[in-house]
Length: 346
Image 1 (spheres, rainbow, N blue to C red):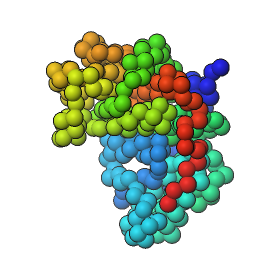
Image 2 (image 1 turned 30 degrees about the horizontal axis):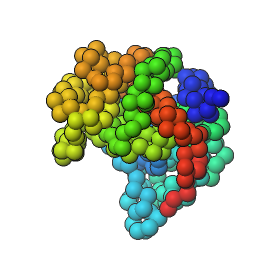
Image 3 (image 1 turned 120 degrees about the horizontal axis):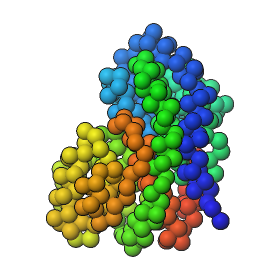
Image 4 (image 1 turned 180 degrees about the vertical axis):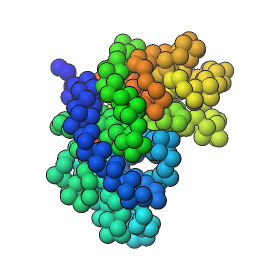
């Protein structure tokens, strides 16, 4: 029987297409209001997979809109009662459910300070949506698997739409219109992903490494491997990995490199070559032949997008890998142990 997660991974192209169609005018209005207000910086509020979407947003709004972007530390609000000054901030709270108490508290405090607040949520009638000045509904439908897949890429799409509209870049919006089909193509590496999952079945730990926009992808793939397959997977930026964690690698150590073409490729390729000299078991998600040829387990990246949109297609093989690794280990990918769909933290 096909799992809910498998169906939700497969649903992503249509979810993205629907979101783009339904919310383009709304997002354009929000962007126009942001330009009018001219906030001093953006403040992203999220947890879990949504936090990884926020990390993508940090690179996105920095690269496309030249904005200063900070990621929230909710405990400053909920435990230390020492919130930062947000009166001139654009506060974007990202939550699939819109119900996490700590995210609500951060947003409530930000609004009381006079910040411009935007909710990115799958539940437009949620407490979060009711708190915010503006709402971008994700239109992802019910996500029955505990692990986020379609809601994660929908969150990134909402942020990408906002970034493109804020920059008043019709060329970027046209690229977004082509994106759902490219995400569909990225699902075509499932045979290679199954091989990767079988190879990881006996692993006791691994690292997932990306850079730039795909640092968020490294975080998200590592999270999926941990929550679905109980595999201790540590995410790193390629640059940070060289500043110490490199010392732990040894022959047979599994390293998953997210290395598509773009400004980060040469550095990722150098890291891959260095890891191979240490006998590392190299898994490569890439569309570059040179990277795939040096990998122990090549995972060819299908789909063609510019660098700012790569995380939409690079995450797909990682989602599939976590799914198939869970199945290979006899685990239920729809119900990871000890986890629930809505996590209530402070």
